Length: 170
Image 1 (spheres, rainbow, N blue to C red):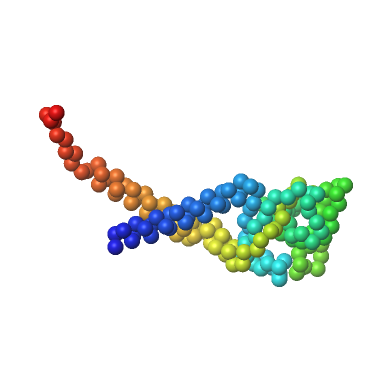
Image 2 (image 1 turned 90 degrees about the vertical axis):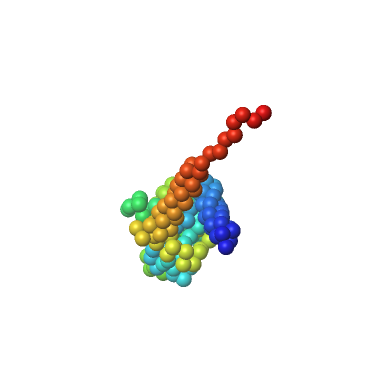
């Protein structure tokens, strides 16, 4: 039973580290994961979904692409809407939510975070939960505390064992 416990802990840690490593690699490549908060793009994606976006150059954008960009009104807000117009001379873009009647205000292409290339249904709920205190405690702080306690106990046992030395033998 002791070996099974170690194998399970190893698999859990390997999965978590592998997932974190993959996420860091994708982030370094310019990818971002965003959580959908509103229904402005229903049925393409829904509140609670997650979007994977990839950074893209202006010449590679096309009308009909769904892009994520920083809102000109509030830089802390990220909007993910469909491109309806691209002005290559001025670099201004116009988007519209699929479920909305009006176009968004024009914004500079420099505000674009990336083009949406994948929708992950319901994954955004988990991302939102991780930003709440309860999620942080359960998913981050508790496993970290358990790892620290486990390691402290292991080190304590190792350094409290008597050291046997034999002297005088040649």
